[in-house]
Amino acid sequence: MLTTSSYIPDQDTHDDRDDVTNEVTGAGYSAGGLILTNKTITYTGTGNVGKIDANDLSWPDSTIANAWVLVIYDDTPAATSAKPLLFSGLFDANVSTSGAT
Image (cartoon, rainbow, N blue to C red; front, side, top):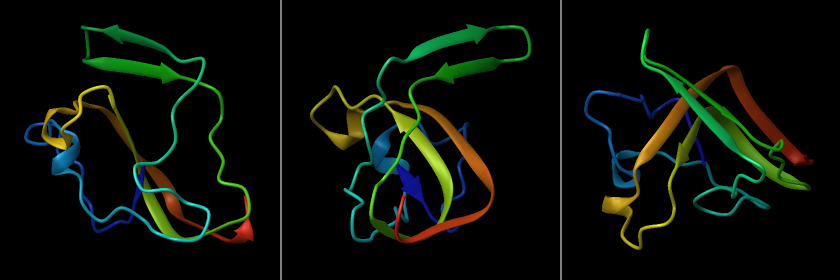
């Protein structure tokens, strides 16, 4: 899922999907984001480093304003309070689309 810069990820206190706020909205963007396909996840305990790789995400013909944070979570559990957060990353700048991908 994508959020605006108003959401500040906190790996010490944000543990589930319901801790994430300020999700972007707009034409062509569905709440909750997209499902990652062909994903691989690796973790190295030394340095607390995780790596997630998957097919590229895109929202064709979308109009999204000011996406700043990418949040990846496990969507398997039914309740948002039980969907564990896996990763959050900041873009270098706000990302916006206007009827584009």
